[in-house]
Image (cartoon, rainbow, N blue to C red; front, top):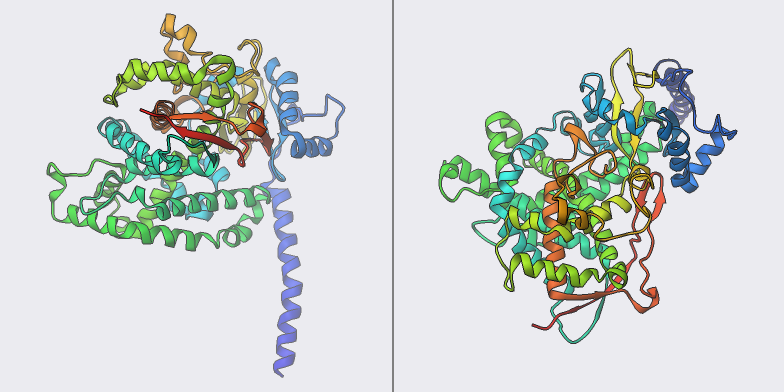
Length: 526
């Protein structure tokens, strides 16, 4: 009888699963499938290329697909539908629609909904971290005041992290792998601002295992997002939990590291010492203080607070690491033609003096060459190909400036890389010029040319009211790291590179730096 029972269960399972999948598929095509209007052109239709061939081309050479869309539609103020990673499509709006898009109410075209779809926080960390992102709001409101208080602490961490990663040998050149080095330096600097100091011991940011755990969670989030991006939306509830299984262990590792500091800080709050002069002034304390007052149940849960910190880390560590990686490659790669390193050393000496100097907002603003180096890096070697992503949530859709109705459920965006390399905007746009933005600014003081200021031709941080609030932290860290590197180290490429920068590669809509790149460094003699 047992054998017969198990056989019947097996047959039912085999029969029911296809029915469920067929039902989901029918539901998708009849009820959830985005219905694009007929007056919205599909890329390839006017060019005589089939949709399937355009999809294949995106998989192998997404940059050429972007270029085709930009030249044939965006430059002519027309919207166009393109394939993106996996089975997905996206409506590209022309640059002329940028201001219109940024002004649309979130109840019609949502930035948050687009982020949730892209990053998949609901599956990797949990729905409330996606739909109630109060940690981000608290951080955004407090970030400027925390940074101004923490300049010296962050720079101390930069020095310690760089010394630990690169060494202090003044006689021998050392070859290092650049990307993991950037991860450690950015991780330590960022976490110093996030977690501050511990009154009872060394800062947690100096624990390499903790930094590794932070990146482990970030990598896990990216893996979940990548997996679901390759899956049709109706199947997310099935495959989302499956793809997110490794996240539990990753979060648990992070919880273990944060527990002593969390208990210490919560103890301070319970004892009422928060109002005293020894109150920590960092992001963690702001998060905990807010949670105790406004989200008491979350405040009691270390797991909840850890997940809030993980969300913040995604915004502050991921792109900063990639940007620093590109910046150092550009710093070395442009040195032969532009004497970049020497020029930056001179600027550091002028701004900070012969000693370490005192960091401040004024000092950061006066580093115009370092600012230009970072901005030119983001312009030419941006990680993102499309930006200002929004999800249309208005049930009836929204009509774009060119008359196309953007339907409910459609993802819309604007091309970033093409706008940032348009020859009508930039002279010799595909050539890296480290001081492209500092030369005119030295005469005109044009604030629109700074690293943190966004525009229609500089979209690495998005644009409008939803532009990345963490860009000011990125700016601070990059300038501090750059200043310390050029002041204290000689840098060059391995001989096999023949003084040429290894190139980035575009994949699935993203500009990926050469993650296996190496550089040679040597500590400068005093």
